[in-house]
Image 1 (spheres, rainbow, N blue to C red):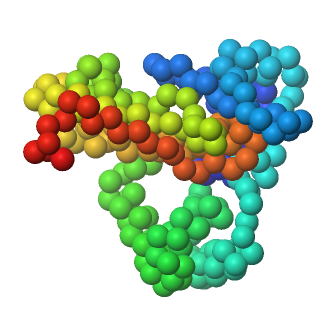
Image 2: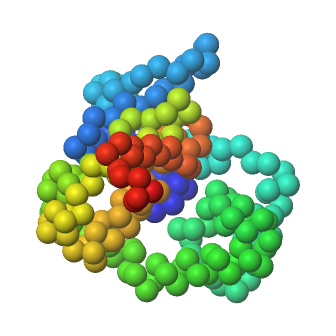
Length: 229
């Protein structure tokens, strides 16, 4: 789902939204204090209690989806959007300002190149059955994988972006290939990226009260031999 799909959620849906993100690690969501512009930690338990105290919570689309739009970027996004709509090549789930802006930025705001890249993405998603993976894929070997490939999301950075940590110096490749296959490993990463787009970013946007669409990654190379760098 795109960020715009979640602009109207009731209390129960918001609660489920946060619970889905808890996973095996304990998240701390940062909440902006509008009074003094400081950021304080807010645990999932605090969020649950807050949601239960309110009978109805509406999430503004401006908080989760809109963010701040640069006028010049807005023109380019609209041009790309109109080009895709004219050829009937813009699925509703990707009809989003920030989604299209990513492709424009990666192609130096060249509309033709950005459109080509966008269409290649759609083809890749179809060829790899990404929507099916995101919906149905179950990675039962997750716990075993974590023991030989330490990684995961843990909290957020000071800007409210989800924090991903990967200890690549502690990866045991021989054991990794014993607990899973290359095909399932790739599907696992695809499913995690889909969760980031459809769950983590909207949840962090809600908590930070601003649009969040990027991740901070920490790669711990301790233990990685120099010849592998």
